[in-house]
Image 1 (cartoon, rainbow, N blue to C red):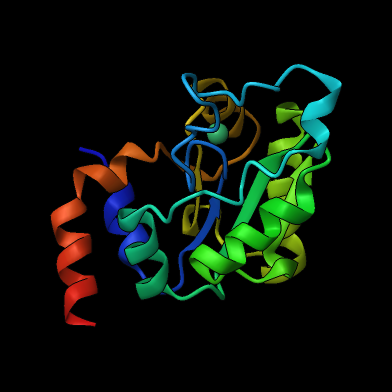
Image 2 (cartoon, helix red, strand yellow):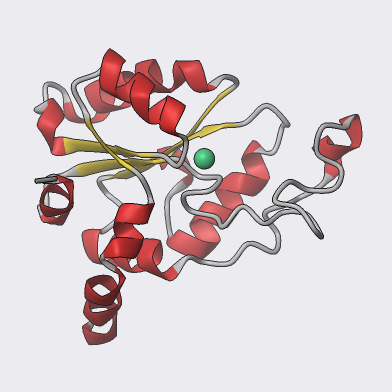
Length: 169
Ligand SMILES: [Mg+2]
């Protein structure tokens, strides 16, 4: 039986969220998930985050949990860091100082370990949940850290609970 949802409800749990496909719905293009200019040099000048919508299950969770123990770790090879950070603040209230970027997904586990060490010292790794929509990345977290992992669909599975909590707040 999976215990991660239970763990996510505990006040002192730290959550490290991926961004694209986790806190966004990844519908950047007109007829594709990717923006039409993705894979071209021109893509660097397009703010794909300007039109992003808040994902209610994730928003409700973050609102209830508070942002003190919420961080973002995102692969960002296109120079979109500032726009992505602005979106995370605007839609989810996540502070700029909690947004971290890597050029390669392979660097995410090491960055996660560093964030936890810098902010929480020797916190038990079983008080940390890494949420990512990429199963290869989830596997890297599992192999290279002792942190717990979750796919964003876990939040969808608990949508009624999350939206009910939000309506009461
Ligand atoms: Mg992703």
